Image (cartoon, rainbow, N blue to C red; front, side, top):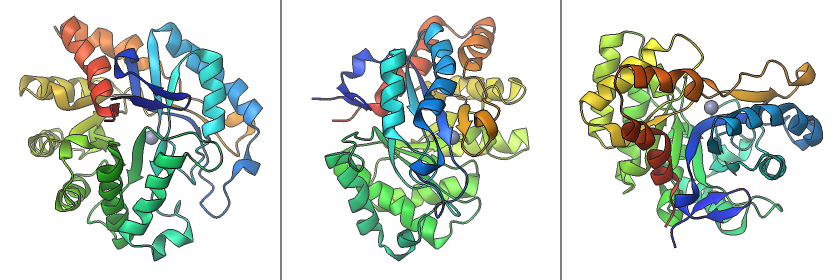
Length: 310
Ligand SMILES: [Zn+2]
């Protein structure tokens, strides 16, 4: 049976309505050697972040995909509590980020052994929580990939083939994106299950960016424009319209990479609201003629398809 795996268990893909595919409830940037649950008070974090989740629920959002990986503040139990409190479906992940947020043991493992750990989280749940991940989150450095990042990308493809989970890769750089695609294809993974996150951060020159984006779309990957609300909205609008014009509506994901309780900062620091996509960006797209069915494809059907397992 096809499902989407949330922190409270599997649900039918059809249960997902409006979905924010890339946001964060909490992030701890202290480093892999220092982070851990001793660094935050789960109740305080929940109390701080609940209003932000309620604000998107009030906009009609039904699901938030939490993209904080292990060793960067991933806390499945925090997400379970917030899901119960807000009624939102929340999805967490397995995988690893990049240096300096990698544990030392990661450097000693072959891709197959690394993948084994992620497959075990899918099969048995994360640590003792029993919470299963809904996707694989990884990251790569900009430019040509470092050996450890090559290992992580290959591990993600291997774990994908064993679990069916999609892979989301923090990228934001054209060469890194192309190289990571070469690696997953060599492992036999279909690029249609691979998300290039932060694709709106690829290249500063607008003309070059459009070429890079088309080159990636041609290979069949998802491009995730997830910086919505962090700057002028023209950039993402131009990229989305260019992709739509070229017929790539089914490979575009939109989100805000927003939120989060900053572990270690007083009161959780400054939290970026997650309301710009529906509050400002979607109305802009409507105003330039993007139809309601097309918006539904971008904000409902595409996330549903990419999160679907089985
Ligand atoms: Zn992110």
